[in-house]
Amino acid sequence: MQKNYRIGQIVPSSNTTMETEIPQMLWQRQQVEPERFTFHSSRMRMQKVTKEELAAMDADSDRCAIELADARVDVLGYACLVAIMSMGRGYHRVAEERLQRRTQETGGPAPVVTSAGALVDGLKAIGAKKVSLLAPYMKPLTALVIDYIENEGIEVVDSISLEIADNLEVGRQDPMAPIEITRKLNIQGVDAVVASACVQMPSLGSIQPIEDRLGLPVISSSVATTYMMLKKLGLKTYAPGFGSLLSGRY
Image (cartoon, rainbow, N blue to C red):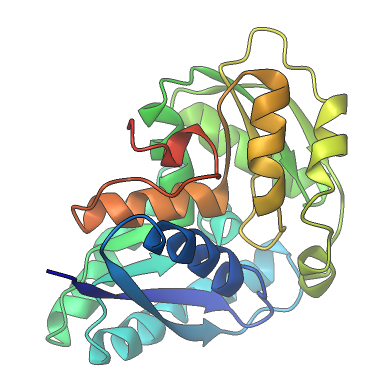
């Protein structure tokens, strides 16, 4: 029997990518699997990707979780990786527990995924101990992301920062650009490549081509978020054409 699932996302107000990439992966999945999905968002204000704006935005996430719980979503994704990682090591666990509590209090208890936690868990799922990554952030924020990932036991061998502070501009990047940019990464000895360590930087069309070229698993924040949403829903972690993590093997 076909089952319908409501996918909820807490999205920064200037994010234009997660409401396109997550549906794209799950719509592709619908071509080969029986489940069907609808998509629902609540937005929290953020324009510039600075530590101060990210902290102010994160404080607004409770309201978003409550609004989505009112829609009785089946899973809830917090779609801003750097907002979580800039709040301190391991903060995704604090945020997930807090937002889960909000959905329970509202009477619409949905499991909560953060893109920050999903990236870490996705890398662990494929057994990655060493990675190289591409991020759009200014270098100090990329350093926070690297520290966060390394605190979770995954070494970051190399990184590229595009140094784009305007979040709208991040969303305007060419989703195929990571194919060429990642050629500059040192991948000696790495187990995986992160083609976009940011949910706003489009990369979906690049995932499979980079993976095919390198012969290594390639993931992004949005791919990892989709993977964890499917896991939380108890569904097959499969969406064809988006790299190893969504191959159904993990």
